[in-house]
Length: 369
Image (cartoon, rainbow, N blue to C red; front, side, top):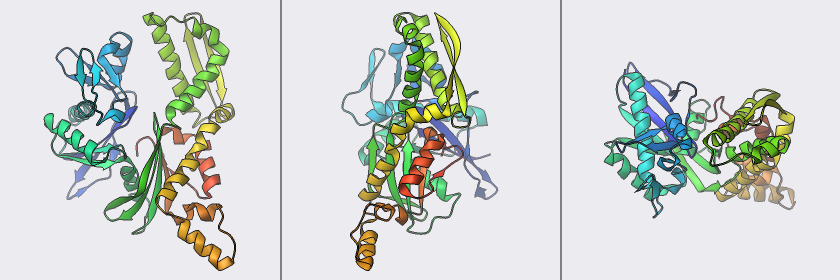
């Protein structure tokens, strides 16, 4: 059955979805697992002996033994003059992005029995024409020439509009809490897609990594002596530390659904379970999550929203314009959409709702939108 493949190469995680042709129409996009254990895979590449790359979990497993051949964090380096060192060779970041796309396309083709009719790549809103051109060139070098490029916030807004009605010229603010950073964008609906208003806002935090670090720091308070005794040159010790960090990330995700979670502490000197409540996690993460509405408001102001409406209200009432909800511009929006796995945390939605006095929309799988 013919299908179109959508790929999102995020800074820390990569996901895919397919839309199949059903008769004369295309069906809705459906996420496609890229591993046997998860919908997403880490955005990690490992160069192998024949010069090609493996990605995802197979690449991550090589970090403990062949870390010099493993590379991550390359999506933010696209367009940089300096290439990245992988083993003994320098490779441009755009070539690494293209290799990640090629790996995903091959994995999906193996699952479905044939390659996609077309590929769409969701990319950082900050890439711009120059960076997207470089990625297109790198993809063409691998034989992938029929690729549509879509900025991440546009993809999120289109996903939202496929499920909820957005009026023509309606405005949607998208906040994406990624694994290694945050971005916020205001878009205006002009069928069949969306246009970006103002300038996308990019910040290093809050991020999913920040929340993982808070959990790890909390665990460290209890087991710091044992963690400090780990030898970074010992492969077993490095594996134990990596496993503990992975446990902290898993516990953070579990707390999105449950009032409590346990972190399995498996170190050479101690093996036990460490309990963490949602209330304690919210105390640890609140400072980071409170940045979301602050940055959203900056993005809304960049788009020029709220100023004229607040001035009109002030003229009608004779009162001075304020920075209450009417002055933020949030009431000029059709919707505020939160994306990224970390917005599963109930406190994230609560803080945005309180500050912007609107109900933010969060998909059932916000890391896949």
